[in-house]
Length: 426
Ligand code: HAM
Image 1 (tube, rainbow, N blue to C red):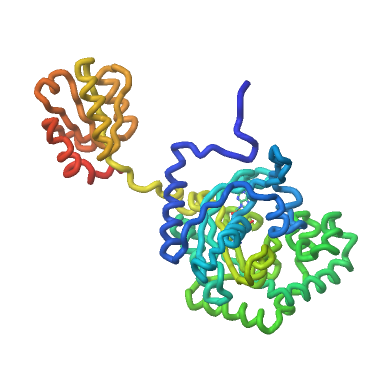
Image 2 (image 1 turned 90 degrees about the vertical axis):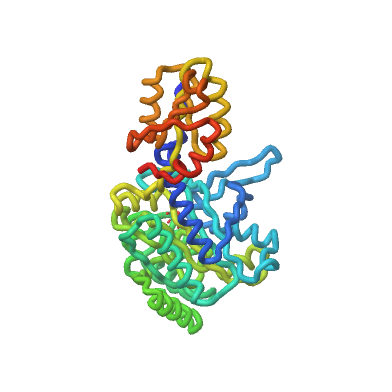
């Protein structure tokens, strides 16, 4: 029996994990500078949470959730996204009591039963941020800028920012009526799902992936015409502050996003290489969600970036993906002869408090051990044979220069701290 990773999932192998760590660390640093704090929620939640928030009529809920019942017949779903869990936690833990304006971020796997292809997986990863507790358009602009900065830190250069506003509840409802009228006249050309959506949620038609529905959506009346005064002003302000921050954007009247909870601002970052149906990330305002989930009336806005897509785009833009960072210095401890084993074994163990130490667990030849050290790309080799042991010293060789010296066993720690630890391996 040969086992395989489930379709649409992938192993992040040691050779690639460096770019993941570098991206997540860079994102964490930027998010922290903007005042966001990390939150970790479970990878599964009550199924109903997503049905209620992401929306019953969305593809995510209709077709893409991984649902299961536990032994007590309770219904759960692997989280398809991170916003609903964060809001669930925000309410459950009354986080507004701790801070009126909560800025939270998360990093982790999400699950959607999507059709796997380049940039589309069944387990994928998001870096997401949620700013909960302000309606100010400054926050919209800042969140969008922050998303752009995170992409820049990942080495993604050629981004296109798409922007729209769905308006507040009143404007959204007005627009839904207008869309219903528009599509009702063209009902025959709609797919069966969208014919149903015509009654339940006409905005969802704009997000349908069936080509004929996409065709019809192209000529819809622009949302902007249905924005009430407050929503229009808010949208203007968001654009004003984006311009102040010198964030370039394109207006996109069809940008409704694939989740139901959005109001007012919606946005997506795209990349030429990935194609228009595969966004690097997206987000928007969701001013009604906290209240709908049983919390206080609290406006909020957030975004998520898809890590796989970001790394893909970064590798296109930089040629080699995000740098996995500077390689640390390290030591390969070569031991020769059974007599040196005990000292070498103890030495390796204690030196690891200071530095990376590799040691051959087999009793192999000097040549074989040196070859291994070379293969691992380690900065220094330390040789401890029976003769060195008798002299209470080791030989240390810097691989890059070939320079070699003898150091007393009692002085090794000092030598590592002063001479080795600062040597970077390229
Ligand atoms: P979303 O647009 O559904 O939004 O997902 C955000 C990003 O996750 C996408 O742009 C994409 O990069 C990545 N993504 C989604 N599905 C897949 C997939 N099957 N394979 C690979 N990557 C994928 C949300 O999830 C919202 N929670 C964003 C948000 C946060 N809105 C407000 N706050």
